[in-house]
Length: 96
Image (cartoon, rainbow, N blue to C red):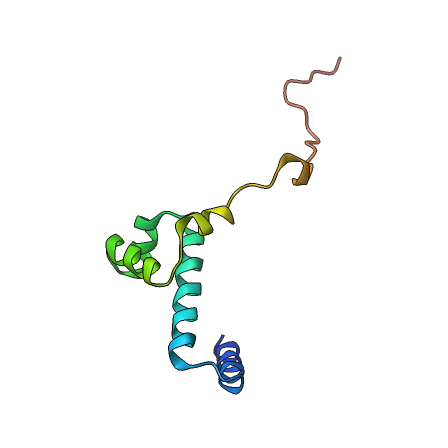
């Protein structure tokens, strides 16, 4: 992970991204990841992050990170796009 982060920092520096912008994007992506892990539950995400839910909400507002945006990525795909899984064993089927 350290190498990946070093590579990312090098890329950001060489492309001229300002420190404030880099920190902002890191925070936004980090919060989005934790919120997705908790399926948009701000209370659980805030607990994992070690902050109060109100502090998390304020940070999200400052970063223009909406909960609707996070939850939209969590929705199940339409039935037509879901993989079909066949059950090989029929429950309640008797032979004889």
